[in-house]
Image (cartoon, rainbow, N blue to C red):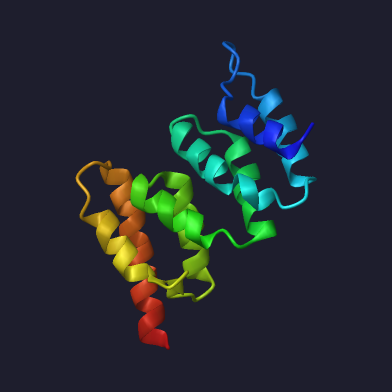
Length: 143
């Protein structure tokens, strides 16, 4: 299967009526073996948004794959600006844990402030964003 077909199948994926994600896992496994899997990053971030309320181990498969291949920061920022969700904030949190304060020429504190000022996200997500901000400020003070 060509990479373009894998990406298209991922875009159109929905679990079966009984909640089976096997096809998704197989598509993701195939994607990671292709040349330049980062071509699928936008689609993968869109899937994290689409299935935000359907916690699945597959989300971690997306995150680990993206982090392994790298060069995803721009797509992460775009995704967080469009619609922050638990897993994209988790990815940002993991970046903060490395001591980074700027990603892809964007200040992380500005990005977090924008998220905290949004009215279209729930309080649990705002708490996660506030936790990220607190850790970011703590790391600023320690440096």
